[in-house]
Length: 201
Image (tube, rainbow, N blue to C red):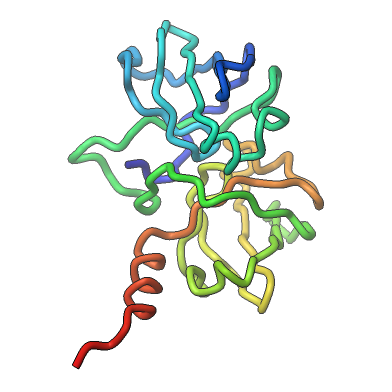
């Protein structure tokens, strides 16, 4: 489990095929206790297992399923920056929302606009199949960052990025046409699933 509060921006130092999957090595400056082998780390919101961790680098191996939901090898390429977060520990502050690190897929940035005070608003595509998982002022995770849905339309939603979020995540780099990894709120998905259950008498 994660919170969607980005701890550091890492960089993919190398990337290569691994059977039908993919292996990356990530340079990081998480600035915490050493990463343990097998530890879960959210990379752009995708929960990956740390392999062969070192003081400033860890490797991670991605299954074909993870690749297919997150943009494939083209996204997980050498030189790309990643939002990083270590797993939540019992007793930690839950400053964002409960994030599983299980990507629901990709969504596309439709437009951006800048507001006074350094805020930036992103409008993103909303598939009809996911409309039931979104509510205005509800939570959503984009590239691993916990955000609030500021506005909602029939086929789009908006998030407002404060200057702090822009300074500490890769979302500042996103432009119209870019794809981002999305994870919809866990509780919204359960609620939608419960509403879809047949009524018993």
